[in-house]
Length: 261
Length: 372
Image 1 (cartoon, rainbow over the protein chains, first blue to last red):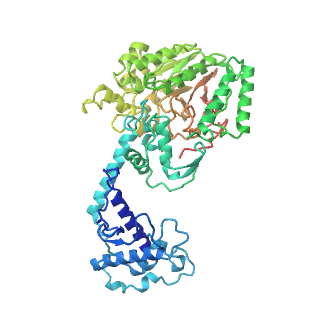
Image 2: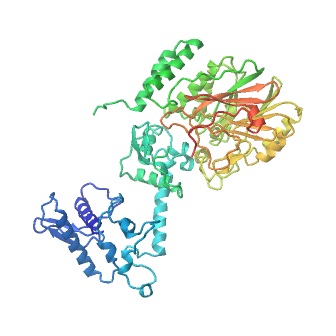
Image 3: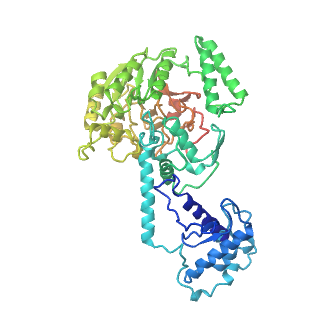
């Protein structure tokens, strides 16, 4: 967990530093951190506020031990500022990387090492260490809390409607040759009504015609360049992202089945 | 940066060009030789999946079967040439196909959706291209031809939308089935907005297709003098049954129309609009879909008639895959075999005996790449 936080914190600092250099202005918020005062590098936590200057010249790396120490320092500062936050010590201290994770270390409790007995169907499950440090259930609040999970139905409504707006934008683009950048009047829906036959759930897969492993966006771009006769869209293009959002939204509930032909 | 190897598309186009160059001026016997050689060479080199490009032999009528045949070209969806040549190339290919048929078909049915947005210049270009067809051409209207000006230009070029004629003992009917109830006036749509709304398949704003009261009355009147033993051949743009409402793969008053056709011993309905292999049977009525020259539609998520043998999922890297034209062979006993001439694939024949036996006999080749 700490490793992740550190990664996020450093990423935040980088985004902050590059925010003005031609980055897209319409989307990603970024953290504005203080400038370095002593020639070092400012490393920020993902809250966007907690930061510390590290004695390492820009472009140079910390050793793993030094990096861990910076991460620990930032976390301690954050926890001192938020004594009310419900922080799960056991999970937070679980920094052993799990070899079979593959989704970034320590993103959630599900990535606890197999010895923790958290895996489904483990025949000889050991007592879970996560429960040993907790107070008895009766003294716990009704639900787990935390800053990340502190949202309510209204928040969910807002998020849903924001997501739907983006999907709707993709829907309009999908049906509009001009917005696709097409030059011959062809739009996606002419072959894919309701995004039928796009099967986004089967990517990535080896696409023999492209002689490589393709993602959905590679196929979208292929269609934009060929039948639609437009220009391939860059990865961070809002148009491409909206198209992906619309196509995926049409396949809600489909089982992910990457590699399927 | 120069590419180190040729892309699959480049190799495909080269193989295709090479084969087409070799084809010029060949007689049929040499054609078959080149076709076999090209398929073999492509396979042997392992260049391409076997369906990507090979010459396929055209399905010729079985000489043992008496009867006659007609060919069709359908759903060309032409834009003006300066905007879009892709679909123009496709219809020219279809014209070449039907002109190369030997023996020649008795007529060529055009299945509707000649234009993409019903514009006079789109219709005029389509008309001029179809003038190159050697056999007589019979025209049918589709919704893409209709909803810009509610048929004004189409009718001035091609005549009435409902008509019939008798041919070699079969009563042939061309029936306008893409009437829609007025959804545009209340929404204050311009004619082009109305056309563009109808042109979208997954567009819930428009109404459903129907033959309509007037069309049904015309059909009843036309059939009043036709004996129930006479085989009927009916052309409609939309399928005269209910397949998938959301995409207008549908005719709202299909039940009423079927009731009019029910007393006849043999009825064959051949329709456009769905751009796919599609077969159905309801009692005495056999239904066949036509291929489009422009693009294939995917199969709808529900409602597919159980007798349909689906076509392979189309290769998105091949403009002509999943498209084509076709023929129908009318037998002396009033039933019809439908031949789908899929470009770049082997043709598929759906025989009357397959539909009549509810799929027990003469099953067409099954698909390898299913729709999902």
